[in-house]
Length: 294
Image 1 (cartoon, rainbow, N blue to C red):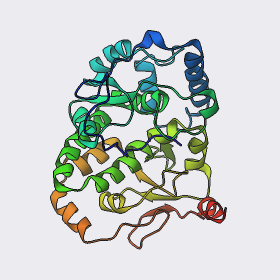
Image 2: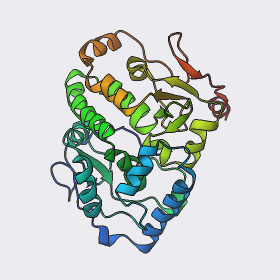
Image 3: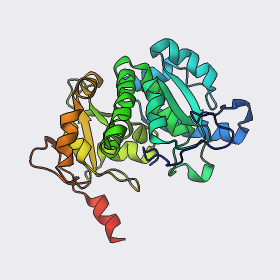
Image 4: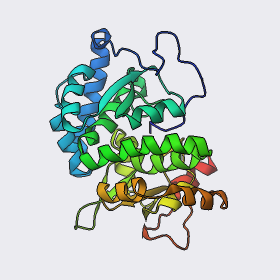
């Protein structure tokens, strides 16, 4: 599992980075081994995702021509992405401060680490790399409603920072952008869309097939109260009806009263079910319990 919104607390960018923490991608410096690692990861995910991921993700891969071999060149990628929805991908040296992250999103810039994991790290990486950031996140930025949601999230993050509510908003990002599920049209099934899932072979299987996790209909306040795991697959997955509905419930909502209510409630433990939940699948929590015994 990779990818999460725990930002660094450094106030100044590192040497070589601009004041907004961006750096050149320097695409020409990638080695043949690094390109081969991308291709290996891409082939593994592309081979198993088509029946599991939301169709808009596959459409985004096609629009952005990400099926071409090798690590994408951001200059080429951005030309197609900007024409689709006005977004750009910018390289950063690693995790960036919260407000820097939010400001980039608010201006339709998605930050991506330029490094790629080593062959020994194919299945687990603590800090998100270019495969998680670009393969996992960028294809859905071609979808207009999801692109608007990401911009609205950045704008909301800047407001949340002033109100001391970043932790609640981080949970929203985690359970949607990183680890969200979506209803499969009118068929009643579920599809993947969260980048932390679609860039992980193991979690792409676990999130839909395993009996262990809870799968719960999305509720904004419930999500913003729910703790999450950074050390393993998720114990809860929240299911949205559509990207349009997600956008409506977040961008068009007055979050001021929501934050005030959240201040009066304790966080909900990962894996817990609440009486008001619309439970689509009550998980056994077997994986979490087994890991707790180790």
